[in-house]
Amino acid sequence: MKFSKVAILGLPRKGNSVKQTIVQLIAFFKHNNMDVYAEPKMISVYHLRDVEPLNTDSNSQRIDLAIVVGGDGSMLGACRNLAKFNIPVIGINRGHLGFLTDLKPNRIEDALSQVINDGKFTVERRNLMDVFITEDDIVLEKHQALNEAVIHPKKVAHMFEFEIYIDDQFMNSMKADGMIISSPTGSTAYALSAGGPIMCPDIRAYCLIPMFPHTLNNRPIVIYDKHTITVDFLGDESSEIAIDGQITVNVAPHQKVVIKKSQTILSLIHPTDYSYYNVLREKLGWGAKLF
Image (cartoon, rainbow, N blue to C red):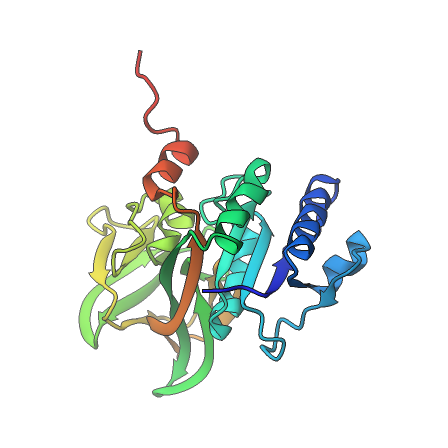
């Protein structure tokens, strides 16, 4: 896999650390005779030179590698769009935890040189989730999620009732503050805070995690990702779905939420020394001496 056109993405932030990383990236890619693109807002805020504006709604520029500078939030927003065009992504961590952005700023050039010049890297593929809003079996809206879809009532700290079906088979009904449907990628995000299990990225599964259920016998359940999940609402209250914590969708009481594995696949590029378990140890503090 050869790379000749690279795009730099990320949310402009205050301070110089992100800008310094981006300027360093531009110089590195130019030195390697690559065409460099960046989002127009990034070009404007940081007054970037020697880069072309990137149209993130089109693949007409035929970008063959994307670099996202920021945290996991920046990665989520960029990856949902880049995956549609089958553009591989590398994340450089300028955020906080950085489960998806695994390159550290102090080793950018060494890591990228292995990828660009030496062709030494691994490609990890992760499926997105398709999230549909339906009414009488007619699809009204479709969205895609990389981490999770969170279904909850519009009122804060308010329970609602709903039923869950797996491939049209009734699974359970419950009264709760909401439901998290998480992919393995999202298992270290909001789902983890709600008591869900960590799922390795190569597991083909989804986890359904009730949020503050009324009865204690409602527990998280992991299912195979080939199944279709349907949430049917009881009562006359409107609900909302939060897609990756970034997109909010309204759901009327008579509508349903249908979630299934997407055919859209995100390709993450990692250095050859990348290890998911190293990431867990670093981010979650595992492996420290007990005494």
